[in-house]
Length: 202
Image (cartoon, rainbow, N blue to C red; front, side, top):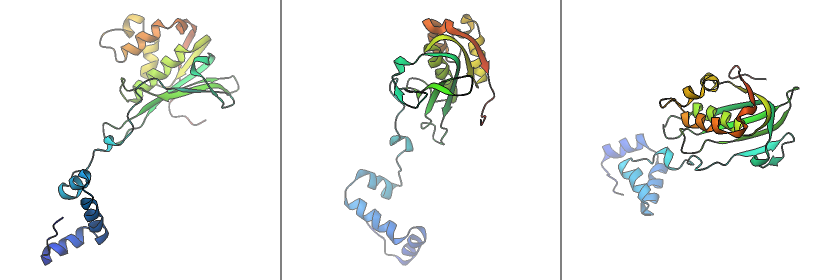
């Protein structure tokens, strides 16, 4: 890497970067790495999303029993009071949000008997709303007895109370997920949907 030795340039360089930075730049450039040339000669930085894990390409949820022991998702049997929730990281870069959801069966004394969670797969938007809808869908899919479902997202709650025709209208957001839920054989076990307050610490 050429270094101009004009006094004015050396002074400006010393004010902008320290000697360690210059030595690191020279070392990286001598290695011949294309990334080093882009960074130190052209001030081109890789986009943060380039090195971030991609959204899950397929279903990969995990489940646990009340003692915290791993169990198979296919063995989960939900009934009674079932809570679902979704979340999403919101970094500055639009390509970096990652969403996930969780479902828990809770006893009358507040004890968790079964819970499961996982990421929202890549064919869906990585948004809080998508996570909330997937959380409810997973809860509905795994019902094996009469249950009340609890969620804190008003949009999902309203969608759950809507008629099948309203849920599946062409312009409905997440109509595909709602349509899938309507087709679940276990859907008849849902005896009610309850809206709870958001962001509560218990």
